[in-house]
Amino acid sequence: MHDLLWHQYGLIAIIFIWSGVVRSGLGFGGAVFSLPFLLMIVNDPLIWLPLISVHLLFFSALTVIKNHKKSSNTDNPIASTINWQYLRYALAVIIIPKIIGVFGLITLAPELLSGIIFMIIAVYSTTYIFNKAFSSKNKYLDIIFLMLGGYISGTSLIGAPLIIAVLANHIDRHQLRDSLFVLWFVLVSIKMAAFIYVGIDLQLIHHLWLLPAAGIGHIIGLRIHDSMLTADPKNFYRGLGLILFALSVFGLWRNFY
Image (cartoon, rainbow, N blue to C red; front, side, top):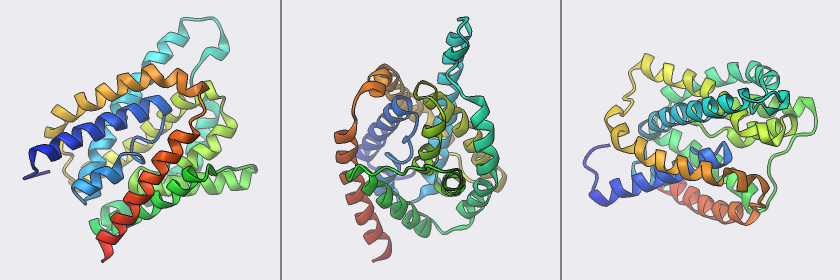
């Protein structure tokens, strides 16, 4: 990020606050719900993905460690906020497509990668608009969703809706967020290792001001997480889906015309 105007830096800070709210409030969506906005400012995913990745690593680890300590202080065996058994299975299915996706990320041209991201988000947005989330009811479709979600996660960090369609059917709701955080931590660690190996700029200097911005959002998200568990978020997702769809269409037009 170079030569941006002051109001663009302000918008970036607001977007990262928003990503923190979504990430800690829902357990997913920090990239899906923020990356289209960021690409409107600088249309290069390899600038934003390292920043989002570091934030996800930091805040997911912080939340899981905090909740693990809390649950370990009780004698209730079901108090754990992580379903380790299903996570091991899911990771075994996801890992190879994930690595293939990471290879695609570091070899594709930025404009093509942005176009792919906008197309994927346009598809996601329609599921929110029409309240038709991805769902899986059999083990073979589970495997397809996990593999496809792993590949998309490798290329762009936005495979969460497909992966959640599977995990939500096999993990109790009170364990879902932290189980997802553990999964994201492992998957993003693979991506970060690839970034470092090929010498991609991790934008470390910008963490000095964007980590506090995401931290504000993280605290807000933690405070509203419990209410999100019991609330009906259909209208929230529908409105957000309309915005994401409009952004995706504009982004595709800008990329290819």
